[in-house]
Image (cartoon, rainbow, N blue to C red):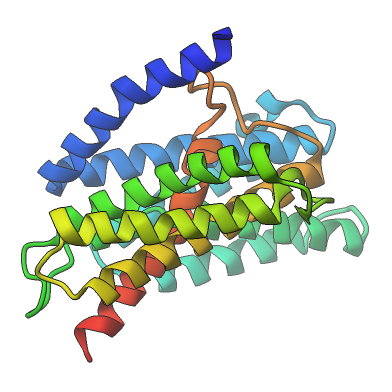
Length: 283
């Protein structure tokens, strides 16, 4: 067993129970955790962007624009968690306008300035708006599933992490057809399909032992959607990192890379699951 695999297993054995406990406590514990994820993830994003510009990873928070983007990301996430989703979108819009107006004063060519604007704007949206939806999933309740928010957040985590593993194993064993060769050369159609098929089993198990108050179709449908959106979200993360020529967003988590590497699928699956639950609750 190689050192990297030992690190991955050790971190998982320690980290997963802590995260589940935080999700169980919810409230200030979960909000604080998600703000920390946002702060660290935003720092990673800014560092990678500036590294891609050839300025060095540590220049991100030494550059006034890098500092501004970090502050805006944390602020939008705080508004999202402590005020509301609508207000968070308003603050996001204001943040993007502010970044755009400052970029328009730059001395580089319009092509470079606009590319930098889209890079920085995407970072604020991606890091500050998506992760807080984990809190909304945890707090979700309806006439059908009142009090099941904790089980839904556990379902989200379980499907993402187990399907990632299943997709990797199936891809290594049977993978022949590249899924997105220019974005993530190691991912295959077979592995992607394996992740989706495993989601059906995971959904049935979750319905049987945790979410029996819901219909099996609803829970299995949620698991399939989490797997689909999570795997595609992972490709979006790979697209961004490959565009700037890096493999990992950082090395803060031994054996796993950075915050953005480890929680990339969750960032996309959490808002998708929350929207799915809202729609199902209104049927």
